[in-house]
Image: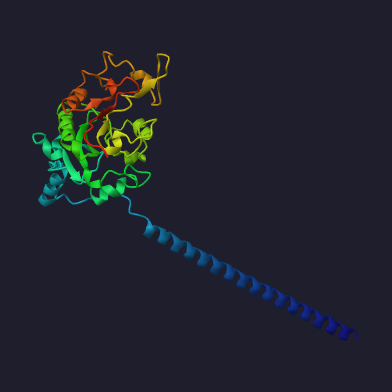
Length: 320
């Protein structure tokens, strides 16, 4: 009985030893597999890092001094040529043979003009359809009820010296009865550098005298009534011209020895005998403009008693 118990104990011990060995072996195998897995992961990470380093190295520009080949003789010649600055030739100035196609108000250089033959720049034309379209209408200079025949009028394009001392292209519509007078007068004014600030058709200002005056515009034909009256103005017949109206205002008596006016700054130009009258573009009997118009048979509004119209010249050669 005692022997049997010993055998049982011995058997139990063997089993315990076997179990312990099996557990130890299993544990060792697990540890080995874990180690192998970690080592494999480390190897993969290392390879991945190596690839990234290689990739960066390939994309990184080479560091160091790069030697460039010495330029050849041809390269040197081309470089020298490119270093030489070639001056652009100045555009050739074309001398105008006429003012056709040149818009009124255009500023021209003296080199663009043949100043020895001014007649080509002071020219009268028939009222073309294009011009008539500009002036026809009840808000234009040639009203729908205008009784002056279109063929009695002419369009003149000419030069004038502006207040800026530059040469400007001007335009004007007048009655053919004073056509030659106007061309001769304004040619002489230009030759003598007489200054006229603007010279555009009054239609550029809606055929409104007050707006035209406020822009100091020199003009002629405008079918309208006389200022403050009920008869057709001489401008309506195309036989009157207003010159630099701001410096040569229209004024009338206040009945008490003074003067009234509507134009801005007119009070600055009441003293017609001022020493600087010429420099200030004021027309008086010593002024070239007055003298030329008078020689051609025009009367001057500056000689009227009341009202007085210093800008105004007229020649009553027609009536309608």
